[in-house]
Length: 169
Image (cartoon, rainbow, N blue to C red; front, side):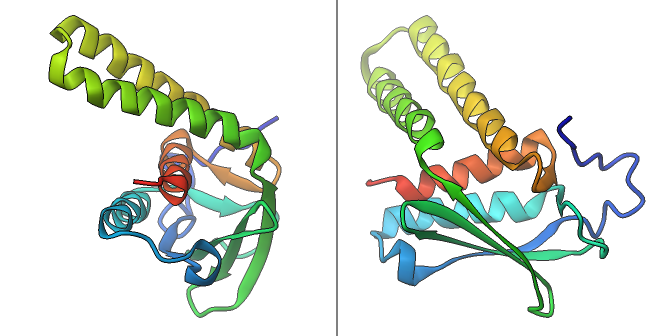
């Protein structure tokens, strides 16, 4: 059964969280100013409110997260605030690729529609866009369920960050 972080009943809720998220510039590479801005927003939103706990860690955190890409894998290096490593998880990007691609396609369609479509069409596309974003977040949660306890909103923000890593601008 998937474990979920529950901020209301967890006595360690204030420490079972991310306090810093960094992107490994060497593996992700430089990006345009717009892409860097999107990445910064995704990181800010993730740090602002999250519930995050590497399963099996005897210490309740808080945690720093370094996100990188290596050999077509998403690498999540988790450490304590003082830099002491906790765990490193490597996830294949293949299962997430379709979710990211579908989400990007829906976003492009939505942004094009804003210029010419009716309000009802725009709202329908926005609902579809949010639905695909939620599906991507659930897929990510499923992939992490035996590794990291996180709530839906944290998974959603982490999926946003993964999308921002792949955004071509």
